[in-house]
Length: 282
Image 1 (cartoon, rainbow, N blue to C red):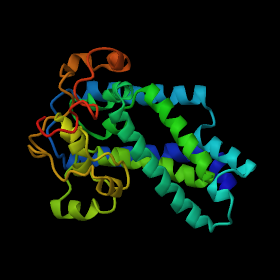
Image 2 (cartoon, rainbow, N blue to C red):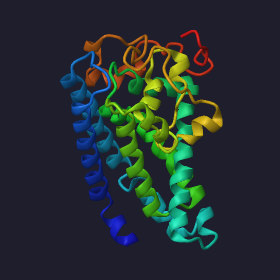
Image 3 (cartoon, rainbow, N blue to C red):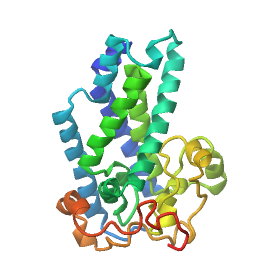
Image 4 (tube, rainbow, N blue to C red):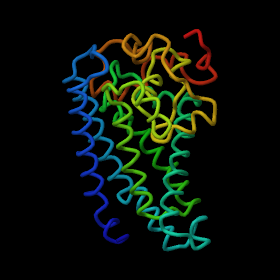
């Protein structure tokens, strides 16, 4: 099974990506949470265009990706999980949980280090939030992220199937929790005990720095509560809150070419943690 999954990794991941994308897009049409403020066609062209550029860059620079690292360290017998005989199902669970915490810490780091925040600004500069926002990351951020995940995989000794499951879950939950669709509040209160919900993550895309610097989780919601970065609701409510960054408010400048050069233009603002980014005065 492991050999089959590893050999068909790209097809498996693409199938899940397309299926989840279409499902979330359909729900957004049926029960939207917020009215969009900018052209959906223009935003989707830029956001989805970034996905193709990111994919091309990863395949060019690291064809085997994170799964290739996992296969390699498995052959070498490196990593904590390769030092003891573990039940396979437990290895998978540990891999998903540990890598999810690594991504949480990575996300926090991209908000804390000003030069990394500049790369991450592209994700936050979206003036609306929907499932395509969850795929919108600067190519340089994607490359750095791969390096961090590769290091975690080597130390952990994560098995290839576990890494593939983690990548599928991460991509799927990123589209889900950026989704612009309504979940009944009672259901949301229960769901956010198990997974990061759209209402929980939307707070993170608020224009107020003290809300931007909260709710860093992508998949598991526990890390924000444990580490003290959890914020239940936005100050102005989900329908009235302003999405994006104060320094990037012109929709005409958020096209695909501008998205690529955005980190190198304009100001970083007061969003980076330590630069007023955790204060509650917005």
